Length: 141
Length: 141
DNA sequence: GTATCTGCAAAACATTTGCAATTCT
DNA sequence: AGAATTGCAAATGTTTTGCAGATAC
Image (cartoon, rainbow over all chains, first blue to last red; front, side, top):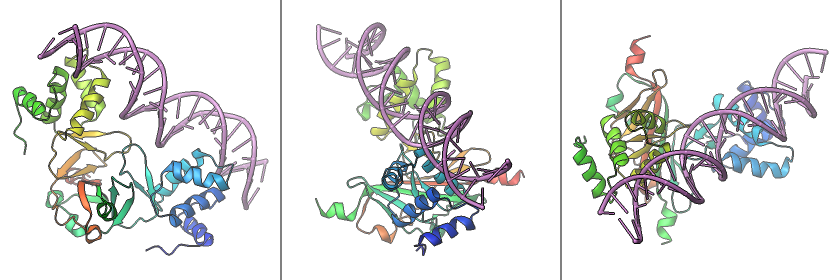
């Protein structure tokens, strides 16, 4: 659970990671923190562009790369063609419903995921992606 | 463990899934079955083109899409920019060593991976991608 | 002989890069 | 002023598509 809510906190969050809190950067991170639906670059850009007419897609790309490198956001590549972003950087998996398209977060037991085959390997990142049909869609058949 | 070895078996394997075993298709699937290193389209194409000068990248793409839809091969998107392919369609995870670039298969306990958060969800596909440093690279520091 | 398969060239798309204009301190 | 940031346009790189020629049954 993240506690970040106000713009002030967003700016602080950026500063703590050595990133200058420019207006576009604050708004992009704020978007990710507020809307937790793992948006694409296109989604972030088109929504923010309504309120920030001068915003360019390049800035969205630059900022997301910056945030990713700083470990403030996390890349979600559950779809092959486009990258999604998640402001929750704690260990968790992603489930994509093929029927409604929603992406759900779910808890994973990090220890249970450590395979014997990887004994003496150093694991830095774990991406767990499931696909199927969510509860809601299964009920509405 | 897969038992497929000879070209005859490859052709049969294709036929069983309703795919006409043309020469390029046999060679592409054979490549995947023989070399188990999760090759990219570029790798498959450039290696096979040495022996099949008329081969085009389009055919490699078409064939891989066909094989994926037929569930004969599996897509591995452990890298953001390019797609890899795996002839092993049984449940297992992929580990990428950031130092040497190798991709390792590892066993996963399917039951342990089923999160309570996904109770009543239907899970069709599970992609588990880890990144880090492999045992060999850790030893050679 | 008809349907399928192949392969070239062009298109489509997401992402990156070069660079000039803008902003911030 | 000087350094960092932004944004446009062009480039890049992977994958798809349209279509004509080749192949198979």
